[in-house]
Length: 425
Image 1: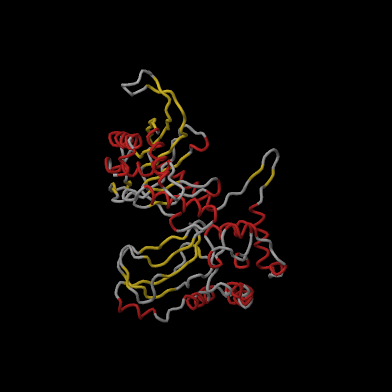
Image 2: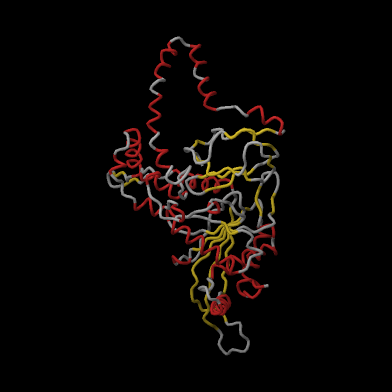
């Protein structure tokens, strides 16, 4: 990320914290994520209030101290006063500088930004909107505080931004806000050329591309592929779905559970390369790829190893619904320990995915198709039979998972899907 907004503070001035405690929530273009403490300390001074304007990475948001008694020293500390005392220092170095400082009085032009607070007062101390709504409003050049929300509690969702039509009131905003709006719309528009068209890339898309390129350079990928008979999964799914009153289960839930179950056979797959050590995780947190195009996200389903098929199905359905409505949570930006993507709906037979650091593996699923395979029924007179088969390909980081661990994991994954009753144990 390059910019963000403090969504909420979980601690106040004078509160103590320890490793893993969530001090505040930070809202980015894609999601709202938790800012966790790494050491013990005390919040001495909060420098940025929740719901304030967007901040660049690197801007101080709070002061922390090690001892509670030291917090009082920062009680009256004000960032603005320190910033105002800084400019006079350069004025001593150069005589023309004091003449340039009188240009500072036009700083009252900043009150021109004061029209924004009245709009936010309609919904409280901050604009209540989903991260995706913020991102879309920036790309379309809209002031999100002027857009009415239709989500729960008046929350602004992405659909509200896309359907928003600027009113005459918005047109009367001062030129200082309309100029950036026009510039933002111009940068988002396609640029035609001689036989081609350039489509500007959003900052979030650039960040994803940079991370994938870095992972492909740094991680020594290798790939393993296996064909899996899905007849038993489909049969058990139909039986369980007929007993369910809430729409039943999908095949994807069985695949997620089988991948998590296979970690018990080969725990080394549920690990990360930490430069000086290999970190093996206790819980299996699955990043599941959902959505398409610009609406592509990887929400995490936590502790899949101890969750049943129904619980996994509920979380998976909630994730897909959140993508459709734009109600994205912090789980959409969180990193799990393993990634699964399903390309079967596009008719893809197999895919070798890029591993996302610091994970060590990524699993891609192909389409299920009818194939003629040898008949393993000893009582049948037929040599061959028709079966539903799916191809699964796993990308592995050879630094963490070599072939001696990767092959047994894929074998265990295949075994669980071909005998799916083991997933119910």
